[in-house]
Length: 151
Image (tube, rainbow, N blue to C red):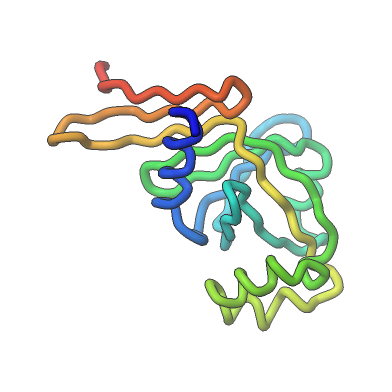
Protein backbone atom coordinates (compact mmCIF):
# COMPACT_ATOMS: atom_id res chain seq x y z
CA UNK A 1 0.00 0.00 0.00
CA UNK A 2 1.41 3.39 -1.02
CA UNK A 3 1.46 6.61 1.00
CA UNK A 4 -1.69 8.02 -0.63
CA UNK A 5 -3.62 4.81 0.03
CA UNK A 6 -2.44 4.71 3.66
CA UNK A 7 -3.40 8.35 4.32
CA UNK A 8 -6.73 7.94 2.51
CA UNK A 9 -7.58 4.77 4.45
CA UNK A 10 -6.69 6.52 7.73
CA UNK A 11 -8.89 9.49 6.81
CA UNK A 12 -11.93 7.31 6.05
CA UNK A 13 -11.34 5.21 9.18
CA UNK A 14 -11.35 8.39 11.28
CA UNK A 15 -14.37 9.73 9.34
CA UNK A 16 -16.38 6.72 10.44
CA UNK A 17 -19.56 5.09 9.09
CA UNK A 18 -21.58 8.27 8.75
CA UNK A 19 -22.13 11.90 9.66
CA UNK A 20 -24.66 14.66 9.27
CA UNK A 21 -23.15 16.99 6.69
CA UNK A 22 -24.06 20.10 4.71
CA UNK A 23 -24.63 19.35 1.01
CA UNK A 24 -24.19 22.29 -1.38
CA UNK A 25 -25.52 22.15 -4.94
CA UNK A 26 -25.65 24.63 -7.82
CA UNK A 27 -28.90 26.30 -8.86
CA UNK A 28 -29.84 26.72 -12.51
CA UNK A 29 -28.86 30.23 -13.55
CA UNK A 30 -26.22 30.51 -10.84
CA UNK A 31 -26.08 30.49 -7.10
CA UNK A 32 -25.66 27.72 -4.60
CA UNK A 33 -28.06 26.18 -2.10
CA UNK A 34 -27.16 24.13 0.96
CA UNK A 35 -28.92 21.81 3.34
CA UNK A 36 -28.19 19.18 6.02
CA UNK A 37 -28.03 15.55 4.94
CA UNK A 38 -27.64 12.26 6.79
CA UNK A 39 -24.66 10.65 5.08
CA UNK A 40 -23.40 7.05 5.11
CA UNK A 41 -19.76 6.23 4.27
CA UNK A 42 -18.86 2.86 2.76
CA UNK A 43 -15.34 2.25 1.43
CA UNK A 44 -14.65 5.94 0.83
CA UNK A 45 -17.89 6.67 -1.02
CA UNK A 46 -20.58 8.79 0.64
CA UNK A 47 -24.28 7.99 0.19
CA UNK A 48 -27.42 9.97 0.96
CA UNK A 49 -31.08 9.82 0.04
CA UNK A 50 -33.54 12.52 -0.99
CA UNK A 51 -37.07 12.89 -2.31
CA UNK A 52 -37.31 13.24 -6.09
CA UNK A 53 -39.65 16.24 -5.60
CA UNK A 54 -36.99 18.21 -3.69
CA UNK A 55 -34.95 21.04 -5.18
CA UNK A 56 -31.63 19.29 -4.49
CA UNK A 57 -32.74 16.31 -6.58
CA UNK A 58 -33.37 18.48 -9.64
CA UNK A 59 -30.13 20.39 -9.03
CA UNK A 60 -28.07 17.19 -8.84
CA UNK A 61 -29.60 15.85 -12.04
CA UNK A 62 -28.77 19.12 -13.84
CA UNK A 63 -25.31 19.55 -12.26
CA UNK A 64 -23.88 16.49 -10.48
CA UNK A 65 -20.88 18.34 -9.02
CA UNK A 66 -21.48 19.10 -5.35
CA UNK A 67 -19.74 19.73 -2.03
CA UNK A 68 -20.17 18.24 1.43
CA UNK A 69 -18.92 19.93 4.58
CA UNK A 70 -18.86 19.10 8.28
CA UNK A 71 -16.69 20.68 10.94
CA UNK A 72 -13.12 20.88 9.68
CA UNK A 73 -13.75 18.67 6.60
CA UNK A 74 -14.62 19.91 3.09
CA UNK A 75 -15.22 17.49 0.23
CA UNK A 76 -15.83 18.25 -3.44
CA UNK A 77 -17.09 15.55 -5.75
CA UNK A 78 -19.58 14.17 -8.20
CA UNK A 79 -22.98 12.68 -7.38
CA UNK A 80 -24.62 9.80 -9.19
CA UNK A 81 -28.22 8.66 -8.76
CA UNK A 82 -28.53 4.97 -7.87
CA UNK A 83 -32.30 4.41 -7.82
CA UNK A 84 -34.48 3.79 -4.79
CA UNK A 85 -32.64 3.31 -1.49
CA UNK A 86 -34.96 0.42 -0.61
CA UNK A 87 -33.40 -1.47 -3.54
CA UNK A 88 -29.91 -1.34 -1.97
CA UNK A 89 -29.88 -3.63 1.10
CA UNK A 90 -26.29 -2.71 2.04
CA UNK A 91 -27.28 0.99 2.16
CA UNK A 92 -30.47 0.25 4.09
CA UNK A 93 -28.58 -1.74 6.71
CA UNK A 94 -26.01 1.03 7.24
CA UNK A 95 -28.58 3.86 7.13
CA UNK A 96 -30.94 2.10 9.55
CA UNK A 97 -28.14 1.58 12.09
CA UNK A 98 -27.07 5.26 11.92
CA UNK A 99 -30.40 7.07 11.42
CA UNK A 100 -33.23 4.74 12.50
CA UNK A 101 -35.95 7.42 12.65
CA UNK A 102 -35.12 8.80 9.22
CA UNK A 103 -34.88 5.28 7.83
CA UNK A 104 -38.37 4.34 9.05
CA UNK A 105 -39.99 7.59 7.85
CA UNK A 106 -38.37 8.09 4.45
CA UNK A 107 -36.38 5.15 3.03
CA UNK A 108 -39.42 3.00 2.09
CA UNK A 109 -41.15 5.85 0.20
CA UNK A 110 -41.54 5.44 -3.57
CA UNK A 111 -40.23 8.96 -4.21
CA UNK A 112 -36.92 8.52 -2.33
CA UNK A 113 -33.73 8.31 -4.39
CA UNK A 114 -30.24 7.25 -3.40
CA UNK A 115 -27.15 9.18 -4.47
CA UNK A 116 -23.48 8.19 -4.32
CA UNK A 117 -20.98 11.03 -3.79
CA UNK A 118 -17.46 10.25 -5.00
CA UNK A 119 -14.88 12.72 -3.76
CA UNK A 120 -12.57 14.44 -6.21
CA UNK A 121 -10.82 16.43 -3.49
CA UNK A 122 -10.79 16.53 0.29
CA UNK A 123 -9.53 19.37 2.46
CA UNK A 124 -9.24 19.12 6.23
CA UNK A 125 -7.92 21.47 8.89
CA UNK A 126 -5.77 19.81 11.54
CA UNK A 127 -3.99 21.17 14.60
CA UNK A 128 -0.64 19.56 15.22
CA UNK A 129 1.00 20.59 18.49
CA UNK A 130 -1.35 23.58 18.53
CA UNK A 131 -0.37 24.77 15.05
CA UNK A 132 -2.89 24.85 12.18
CA UNK A 133 -2.27 22.61 9.17
CA UNK A 134 -4.20 21.84 5.99
CA UNK A 135 -4.46 18.25 4.80
CA UNK A 136 -5.28 17.85 1.10
CA UNK A 137 -6.28 14.83 -0.97
CA UNK A 138 -6.48 14.99 -4.77
CA UNK A 139 -8.23 11.77 -5.71
CA UNK A 140 -7.55 11.94 -9.48
CA UNK A 141 -3.83 12.54 -9.00
CA UNK A 142 -3.69 10.22 -5.96
CA UNK A 143 -1.83 12.98 -4.15
CA UNK A 144 -1.79 13.67 -0.41
CA UNK A 145 -0.30 16.75 1.18
CA UNK A 146 -0.10 18.01 4.75
CA UNK A 147 1.24 21.52 5.11
CA UNK A 148 1.35 24.20 7.79
CA UNK A 149 -1.22 26.94 7.35
CA UNK A 150 0.59 30.19 6.66
CA UNK A 151 -1.73 33.13 5.89
